[in-house]
Image 1 (cartoon, one colour):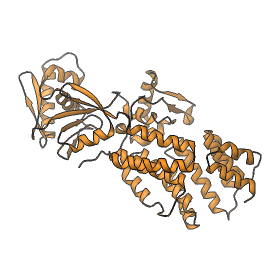
Image 2 (cartoon, helix red, strand yellow; image 1 turned 180 degrees about the vertical axis):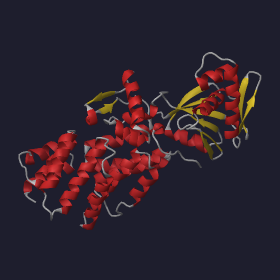
Image 3 (tube, one colour; image 1 turned 30 degrees about the vertical axis):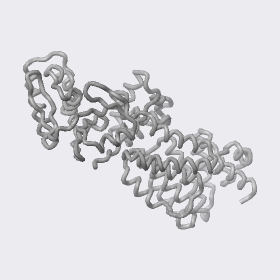
Image 4 (cartoon, one colour; image 1 turned 135 degrees about the vertical axis):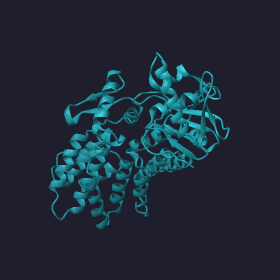
Length: 406
Protein backbone atom coordinates (compact mmCIF):
# COMPACT_ATOMS: atom_id res chain seq x y z
CA UNK A 1 0.00 0.00 0.00
CA UNK A 2 1.50 3.35 -1.02
CA UNK A 3 1.59 6.36 1.27
CA UNK A 4 -1.33 8.24 -0.39
CA UNK A 5 -3.63 5.24 -0.15
CA UNK A 6 -2.66 4.72 3.50
CA UNK A 7 -3.26 8.40 4.30
CA UNK A 8 -6.63 8.37 2.53
CA UNK A 9 -7.66 5.27 4.45
CA UNK A 10 -6.72 6.90 7.76
CA UNK A 11 -8.73 10.00 6.81
CA UNK A 12 -11.82 7.91 6.05
CA UNK A 13 -11.46 6.01 9.32
CA UNK A 14 -11.45 9.37 11.12
CA UNK A 15 -14.57 10.55 9.26
CA UNK A 16 -12.74 12.99 6.97
CA UNK A 17 -13.92 12.17 3.42
CA UNK A 18 -12.64 15.44 1.93
CA UNK A 19 -9.18 14.74 3.27
CA UNK A 20 -9.30 11.31 1.65
CA UNK A 21 -10.45 12.71 -1.70
CA UNK A 22 -7.59 15.22 -1.75
CA UNK A 23 -5.21 12.29 -1.86
CA UNK A 24 -6.92 9.92 -4.34
CA UNK A 25 -9.44 11.98 -6.32
CA UNK A 26 -7.40 11.79 -9.57
CA UNK A 27 -6.45 8.13 -9.32
CA UNK A 28 -8.28 5.24 -11.02
CA UNK A 29 -6.47 2.20 -9.60
CA UNK A 30 -8.59 -0.31 -7.70
CA UNK A 31 -7.65 0.81 -4.18
CA UNK A 32 -8.20 4.47 -5.01
CA UNK A 33 -11.59 3.71 -6.57
CA UNK A 34 -12.65 1.89 -3.41
CA UNK A 35 -11.55 4.75 -1.17
CA UNK A 36 -13.22 7.29 -3.42
CA UNK A 37 -16.43 5.28 -3.24
CA UNK A 38 -16.37 5.22 0.55
CA UNK A 39 -15.61 8.95 0.64
CA UNK A 40 -18.56 9.73 -1.65
CA UNK A 41 -20.78 7.59 0.57
CA UNK A 42 -19.71 9.59 3.62
CA UNK A 43 -20.52 12.77 1.71
CA UNK A 44 -24.00 11.48 0.88
CA UNK A 45 -23.64 10.80 -2.86
CA UNK A 46 -24.73 7.18 -2.56
CA UNK A 47 -25.33 6.53 -6.25
CA UNK A 48 -21.83 7.67 -7.19
CA UNK A 49 -20.38 5.74 -4.26
CA UNK A 50 -22.05 2.51 -5.37
CA UNK A 51 -20.74 2.91 -8.93
CA UNK A 52 -17.18 3.53 -7.73
CA UNK A 53 -17.21 0.53 -5.41
CA UNK A 54 -18.44 -1.75 -8.17
CA UNK A 55 -15.67 -0.49 -10.45
CA UNK A 56 -13.17 -1.13 -7.67
CA UNK A 57 -14.42 -4.69 -7.10
CA UNK A 58 -13.99 -5.43 -10.82
CA UNK A 59 -10.55 -3.83 -10.88
CA UNK A 60 -9.12 -5.93 -8.06
CA UNK A 61 -7.39 -9.05 -9.34
CA UNK A 62 -8.45 -12.66 -8.68
CA UNK A 63 -5.88 -12.96 -5.88
CA UNK A 64 -7.29 -9.92 -4.06
CA UNK A 65 -10.32 -11.65 -2.55
CA UNK A 66 -10.15 -9.66 0.66
CA UNK A 67 -10.20 -6.34 -1.18
CA UNK A 68 -13.20 -7.43 -3.24
CA UNK A 69 -14.99 -8.62 -0.09
CA UNK A 70 -14.40 -5.25 1.55
CA UNK A 71 -15.99 -3.57 -1.48
CA UNK A 72 -19.04 -5.80 -1.08
CA UNK A 73 -19.32 -4.86 2.60
CA UNK A 74 -19.04 -1.17 1.74
CA UNK A 75 -21.73 -1.54 -0.92
CA UNK A 76 -23.96 -3.29 1.62
CA UNK A 77 -23.51 -0.36 3.98
CA UNK A 78 -24.58 2.01 1.21
CA UNK A 79 -27.62 -0.18 0.54
CA UNK A 80 -28.55 0.03 4.22
CA UNK A 81 -28.09 3.81 4.26
CA UNK A 82 -30.31 4.15 1.18
CA UNK A 83 -32.81 1.71 2.73
CA UNK A 84 -32.39 -0.86 -0.02
CA UNK A 85 -33.47 -3.75 2.20
CA UNK A 86 -33.77 -6.06 -0.78
CA UNK A 87 -30.01 -5.94 -1.38
CA UNK A 88 -28.78 -9.57 -1.61
CA UNK A 89 -27.88 -10.65 1.91
CA UNK A 90 -26.11 -13.74 0.53
CA UNK A 91 -23.47 -11.50 -1.05
CA UNK A 92 -22.76 -9.87 2.28
CA UNK A 93 -22.61 -13.24 4.03
CA UNK A 94 -20.17 -14.60 1.43
CA UNK A 95 -17.99 -11.50 1.83
CA UNK A 96 -18.02 -11.93 5.60
CA UNK A 97 -16.92 -15.55 5.30
CA UNK A 98 -14.05 -14.50 3.03
CA UNK A 99 -12.94 -11.84 5.49
CA UNK A 100 -13.06 -14.27 8.41
CA UNK A 101 -11.06 -16.88 6.49
CA UNK A 102 -8.34 -14.32 5.77
CA UNK A 103 -8.17 -13.01 9.33
CA UNK A 104 -9.86 -9.63 8.75
CA UNK A 105 -12.05 -9.92 11.81
CA UNK A 106 -12.79 -6.17 12.10
CA UNK A 107 -14.41 -5.91 8.67
CA UNK A 108 -16.08 -9.30 9.24
CA UNK A 109 -17.59 -7.89 12.43
CA UNK A 110 -18.72 -4.83 10.48
CA UNK A 111 -20.48 -7.13 8.00
CA UNK A 112 -22.36 -8.78 10.86
CA UNK A 113 -23.29 -5.37 12.26
CA UNK A 114 -24.75 -4.38 8.90
CA UNK A 115 -26.81 -7.55 8.68
CA UNK A 116 -27.99 -7.06 12.25
CA UNK A 117 -29.10 -3.50 11.56
CA UNK A 118 -30.95 -4.63 8.43
CA UNK A 119 -32.78 -7.32 10.42
CA UNK A 120 -33.58 -4.78 13.15
CA UNK A 121 -35.17 -2.43 10.61
CA UNK A 122 -37.35 -5.30 9.42
CA UNK A 123 -38.45 -6.15 12.96
CA UNK A 124 -36.72 -9.55 12.97
CA UNK A 125 -35.33 -9.12 16.45
CA UNK A 126 -34.43 -12.71 17.25
CA UNK A 127 -32.41 -13.02 14.05
CA UNK A 128 -30.71 -9.71 14.79
CA UNK A 129 -29.76 -10.95 18.27
CA UNK A 130 -28.33 -14.18 16.85
CA UNK A 131 -26.29 -12.20 14.34
CA UNK A 132 -24.98 -9.95 17.10
CA UNK A 133 -24.07 -12.96 19.23
CA UNK A 134 -21.70 -14.22 16.50
CA UNK A 135 -19.69 -11.00 16.37
CA UNK A 136 -16.06 -11.61 17.30
CA UNK A 137 -15.35 -11.43 21.00
CA UNK A 138 -11.95 -9.79 20.48
CA UNK A 139 -11.30 -6.06 20.88
CA UNK A 140 -12.83 -3.81 18.23
CA UNK A 141 -11.89 -0.25 17.26
CA UNK A 142 -13.95 2.52 18.86
CA UNK A 143 -16.16 3.14 15.80
CA UNK A 144 -17.05 -0.55 15.54
CA UNK A 145 -17.81 -0.70 19.27
CA UNK A 146 -20.13 2.29 18.95
CA UNK A 147 -22.00 0.67 16.06
CA UNK A 148 -22.33 -2.58 17.99
CA UNK A 149 -23.70 -0.79 21.05
CA UNK A 150 -26.18 1.07 18.85
CA UNK A 151 -27.42 -2.27 17.60
CA UNK A 152 -27.70 -3.60 21.16
CA UNK A 153 -29.63 -0.48 22.16
CA UNK A 154 -31.92 -0.70 19.14
CA UNK A 155 -32.91 -4.27 19.93
CA UNK A 156 -33.43 -3.40 23.60
CA UNK A 157 -35.61 -0.40 22.76
CA UNK A 158 -37.80 -2.46 20.46
CA UNK A 159 -38.20 -5.02 23.24
CA UNK A 160 -38.86 -2.23 25.77
CA UNK A 161 -35.80 -2.97 27.86
CA UNK A 162 -34.94 0.64 28.48
CA UNK A 163 -32.32 0.09 31.18
CA UNK A 164 -30.35 -2.17 28.85
CA UNK A 165 -30.77 0.35 26.02
CA UNK A 166 -29.59 3.28 28.14
CA UNK A 167 -26.52 1.36 29.33
CA UNK A 168 -25.64 0.38 25.77
CA UNK A 169 -26.03 3.96 24.56
CA UNK A 170 -23.78 5.20 27.35
CA UNK A 171 -21.09 2.80 26.13
CA UNK A 172 -21.79 3.89 22.54
CA UNK A 173 -21.28 7.53 23.53
CA UNK A 174 -17.88 6.81 25.02
CA UNK A 175 -16.83 4.78 21.98
CA UNK A 176 -18.08 7.42 19.52
CA UNK A 177 -16.19 10.18 21.34
CA UNK A 178 -13.08 8.03 21.35
CA UNK A 179 -13.48 7.51 17.60
CA UNK A 180 -13.97 11.25 17.09
CA UNK A 181 -16.38 10.83 14.15
CA UNK A 182 -19.06 13.57 14.21
CA UNK A 183 -21.66 11.62 12.22
CA UNK A 184 -21.35 8.66 14.59
CA UNK A 185 -21.72 10.90 17.64
CA UNK A 186 -24.82 12.44 16.06
CA UNK A 187 -26.31 8.98 15.50
CA UNK A 188 -25.78 8.08 19.15
CA UNK A 189 -27.33 11.39 20.24
CA UNK A 190 -30.34 10.63 18.04
CA UNK A 191 -30.78 7.24 19.70
CA UNK A 192 -30.64 8.86 23.14
CA UNK A 193 -33.29 11.33 21.97
CA UNK A 194 -35.67 8.45 21.24
CA UNK A 195 -35.36 7.36 24.89
CA UNK A 196 -36.08 10.83 26.18
CA UNK A 197 -39.08 11.83 24.05
CA UNK A 198 -42.69 10.67 24.33
CA UNK A 199 -43.43 7.29 22.77
CA UNK A 200 -47.14 6.93 23.58
CA UNK A 201 -50.18 8.45 25.28
CA UNK A 202 -51.86 6.93 28.29
CA UNK A 203 -55.65 7.33 28.34
CA UNK A 204 -57.24 6.49 31.69
CA UNK A 205 -60.46 7.61 33.38
CA UNK A 206 -61.01 10.42 30.89
CA UNK A 207 -57.52 11.95 31.17
CA UNK A 208 -54.43 11.70 28.98
CA UNK A 209 -50.70 12.05 29.50
CA UNK A 210 -47.60 11.36 27.45
CA UNK A 211 -45.40 8.36 28.23
CA UNK A 212 -41.70 7.76 27.65
CA UNK A 213 -40.48 4.28 26.71
CA UNK A 214 -39.49 3.74 30.35
CA UNK A 215 -43.05 4.57 31.41
CA UNK A 216 -44.45 2.07 28.92
CA UNK A 217 -42.10 -0.61 30.22
CA UNK A 218 -43.22 0.11 33.79
CA UNK A 219 -46.87 0.02 32.73
CA UNK A 220 -46.50 -3.45 31.22
CA UNK A 221 -44.82 -4.64 34.41
CA UNK A 222 -47.66 -3.26 36.57
CA UNK A 223 -50.99 -4.89 37.35
CA UNK A 224 -52.95 -2.61 35.00
CA UNK A 225 -55.28 -3.99 32.33
CA UNK A 226 -53.91 -2.46 29.12
CA UNK A 227 -55.66 -1.97 25.81
CA UNK A 228 -52.60 -1.41 23.64
CA UNK A 229 -53.54 0.68 20.60
CA UNK A 230 -49.91 0.77 19.43
CA UNK A 231 -49.84 -2.98 18.72
CA UNK A 232 -53.58 -3.80 18.79
CA UNK A 233 -53.21 -6.08 21.81
CA UNK A 234 -55.15 -6.47 25.04
CA UNK A 235 -52.86 -7.51 27.90
CA UNK A 236 -53.22 -8.31 31.60
CA UNK A 237 -51.24 -10.32 34.17
CA UNK A 238 -48.54 -11.31 31.70
CA UNK A 239 -51.04 -12.54 29.11
CA UNK A 240 -51.74 -10.87 25.79
CA UNK A 241 -54.48 -11.33 23.23
CA UNK A 242 -53.82 -9.89 19.79
CA UNK A 243 -56.68 -8.26 17.90
CA UNK A 244 -54.46 -6.95 15.10
CA UNK A 245 -56.39 -8.92 12.48
CA UNK A 246 -59.78 -8.10 13.99
CA UNK A 247 -60.04 -4.29 13.74
CA UNK A 248 -63.75 -4.12 14.58
CA UNK A 249 -63.22 -6.02 17.83
CA UNK A 250 -60.26 -3.85 18.74
CA UNK A 251 -62.21 -0.65 18.02
CA UNK A 252 -64.89 -1.82 20.45
CA UNK A 253 -62.29 -2.85 23.05
CA UNK A 254 -60.56 0.51 22.81
CA UNK A 255 -63.82 2.45 23.17
CA UNK A 256 -64.76 0.38 26.23
CA UNK A 257 -61.25 0.84 27.68
CA UNK A 258 -61.37 4.61 27.27
CA UNK A 259 -64.76 4.80 29.00
CA UNK A 260 -63.90 2.46 31.89
CA UNK A 261 -65.27 2.19 34.56
CA UNK A 262 -68.34 3.51 32.77
CA UNK A 263 -70.15 2.05 29.79
CA UNK A 264 -70.35 3.21 26.17
CA UNK A 265 -73.68 3.93 24.41
CA UNK A 266 -74.58 1.65 21.53
CA UNK A 267 -74.67 4.49 18.99
CA UNK A 268 -71.14 5.51 19.98
CA UNK A 269 -69.85 1.96 19.61
CA UNK A 270 -71.52 1.61 16.21
CA UNK A 271 -69.84 4.81 15.02
CA UNK A 272 -66.43 3.74 16.37
CA UNK A 273 -66.58 0.15 15.12
CA UNK A 274 -68.44 0.47 11.82
CA UNK A 275 -67.88 4.12 10.88
CA UNK A 276 -71.60 4.71 10.52
CA UNK A 277 -73.26 7.93 11.64
CA UNK A 278 -76.75 6.59 11.14
CA UNK A 279 -77.92 3.56 13.09
CA UNK A 280 -80.75 1.15 12.57
CA UNK A 281 -81.72 -2.26 13.85
CA UNK A 282 -79.24 -4.02 11.55
CA UNK A 283 -76.37 -2.03 13.06
CA UNK A 284 -77.53 -2.83 16.58
CA UNK A 285 -77.80 -6.51 15.69
CA UNK A 286 -74.32 -6.51 14.24
CA UNK A 287 -73.00 -4.77 17.35
CA UNK A 288 -74.47 -7.52 19.54
CA UNK A 289 -72.72 -10.12 17.38
CA UNK A 290 -69.37 -8.32 17.53
CA UNK A 291 -69.69 -7.73 21.26
CA UNK A 292 -70.26 -11.46 21.69
CA UNK A 293 -67.14 -12.20 19.63
CA UNK A 294 -65.11 -9.77 21.73
CA UNK A 295 -66.46 -11.41 24.89
CA UNK A 296 -65.26 -14.80 23.66
CA UNK A 297 -61.88 -13.42 22.56
CA UNK A 298 -61.24 -11.80 25.97
CA UNK A 299 -62.91 -14.46 28.11
CA UNK A 300 -59.71 -15.27 30.03
CA UNK A 301 -58.97 -11.61 30.82
CA UNK A 302 -62.26 -9.70 30.99
CA UNK A 303 -65.99 -9.77 30.44
CA UNK A 304 -67.99 -7.53 28.07
CA UNK A 305 -71.33 -6.89 29.78
CA UNK A 306 -74.47 -5.34 28.35
CA UNK A 307 -75.93 -2.30 30.11
CA UNK A 308 -79.06 -0.24 29.59
CA UNK A 309 -77.14 2.21 27.40
CA UNK A 310 -74.66 -0.10 25.71
CA UNK A 311 -71.69 -2.19 26.86
CA UNK A 312 -68.98 -2.07 29.51
CA UNK A 313 -65.62 -3.77 30.04
CA UNK A 314 -65.12 -5.62 33.34
CA UNK A 315 -61.63 -7.08 33.99
CA UNK A 316 -61.82 -10.44 35.76
CA UNK A 317 -59.19 -9.43 38.33
CA UNK A 318 -60.66 -6.01 39.05
CA UNK A 319 -57.70 -4.18 37.55
CA UNK A 320 -57.58 -0.56 36.49
CA UNK A 321 -58.16 -0.30 32.73
CA UNK A 322 -55.94 2.00 30.67
CA UNK A 323 -55.50 2.58 26.95
CA UNK A 324 -52.03 3.01 25.49
CA UNK A 325 -52.30 5.04 22.28
CA UNK A 326 -49.89 6.45 19.76
CA UNK A 327 -48.57 9.93 20.58
CA UNK A 328 -49.97 11.14 17.25
CA UNK A 329 -52.91 9.30 15.73
CA UNK A 330 -52.40 8.65 12.03
CA UNK A 331 -54.04 6.19 9.66
CA UNK A 332 -50.71 5.26 8.06
CA UNK A 333 -48.62 5.52 11.22
CA UNK A 334 -46.50 2.44 10.48
CA UNK A 335 -45.34 3.90 7.14
CA UNK A 336 -44.66 7.27 8.77
CA UNK A 337 -42.64 5.54 11.50
CA UNK A 338 -40.12 4.35 8.93
CA UNK A 339 -40.08 7.60 6.96
CA UNK A 340 -39.46 9.51 10.19
CA UNK A 341 -35.90 8.19 10.42
CA UNK A 342 -34.90 10.88 7.92
CA UNK A 343 -33.72 8.44 5.25
CA UNK A 344 -35.22 8.01 1.79
CA UNK A 345 -37.22 4.83 1.27
CA UNK A 346 -38.48 3.01 -1.81
CA UNK A 347 -41.97 1.53 -1.70
CA UNK A 348 -40.50 -1.95 -2.15
CA UNK A 349 -38.21 -1.53 0.88
CA UNK A 350 -41.13 -0.28 2.97
CA UNK A 351 -43.21 -3.27 1.91
CA UNK A 352 -40.38 -5.62 2.87
CA UNK A 353 -39.93 -3.95 6.26
CA UNK A 354 -43.67 -3.90 7.00
CA UNK A 355 -44.33 -7.42 5.76
CA UNK A 356 -47.09 -6.29 3.42
CA UNK A 357 -47.63 -5.84 -0.31
CA UNK A 358 -45.96 -3.08 -2.28
CA UNK A 359 -49.35 -2.00 -3.62
CA UNK A 360 -50.68 -1.50 -0.08
CA UNK A 361 -47.66 0.61 0.78
CA UNK A 362 -48.01 2.62 -2.42
CA UNK A 363 -51.62 3.47 -1.59
CA UNK A 364 -50.53 4.63 1.86
CA UNK A 365 -47.73 6.75 0.38
CA UNK A 366 -50.11 8.32 -2.13
CA UNK A 367 -52.50 9.19 0.70
CA UNK A 368 -49.68 10.69 2.78
CA UNK A 369 -48.43 12.67 -0.22
CA UNK A 370 -51.94 14.02 -0.87
CA UNK A 371 -52.03 15.20 2.75
CA UNK A 372 -48.60 16.82 2.51
CA UNK A 373 -47.06 14.36 4.97
CA UNK A 374 -44.68 12.67 2.52
CA UNK A 375 -42.97 13.57 -0.72
CA UNK A 376 -41.12 11.66 -3.40
CA UNK A 377 -38.27 12.26 -5.80
CA UNK A 378 -36.99 10.26 -8.74
CA UNK A 379 -38.93 8.06 -11.13
CA UNK A 380 -39.59 4.35 -11.61
CA UNK A 381 -37.37 2.07 -9.54
CA UNK A 382 -35.30 5.07 -8.47
CA UNK A 383 -38.28 6.73 -6.80
CA UNK A 384 -37.76 7.42 -3.10
CA UNK A 385 -40.01 8.75 -0.36
CA UNK A 386 -39.11 11.02 2.54
CA UNK A 387 -40.79 13.05 5.22
CA UNK A 388 -39.49 15.18 8.08
CA UNK A 389 -39.75 13.39 11.46
CA UNK A 390 -42.64 14.22 13.75
CA UNK A 391 -41.10 16.73 16.17
CA UNK A 392 -41.00 15.73 19.79
CA UNK A 393 -42.04 12.10 19.41
CA UNK A 394 -40.24 8.80 19.08
CA UNK A 395 -41.70 6.16 16.77
CA UNK A 396 -40.32 3.03 18.45
CA UNK A 397 -43.75 1.69 19.35
CA UNK A 398 -44.95 2.06 15.76
CA UNK A 399 -42.27 -0.14 14.23
CA UNK A 400 -42.75 -3.88 13.67
CA UNK A 401 -41.52 -6.42 16.16
CA UNK A 402 -42.99 -8.00 19.30
CA UNK A 403 -43.33 -6.19 22.56
CA UNK A 404 -42.44 -8.18 25.69
CA UNK A 405 -45.00 -10.35 27.40
CA UNK A 406 -43.74 -11.21 30.89
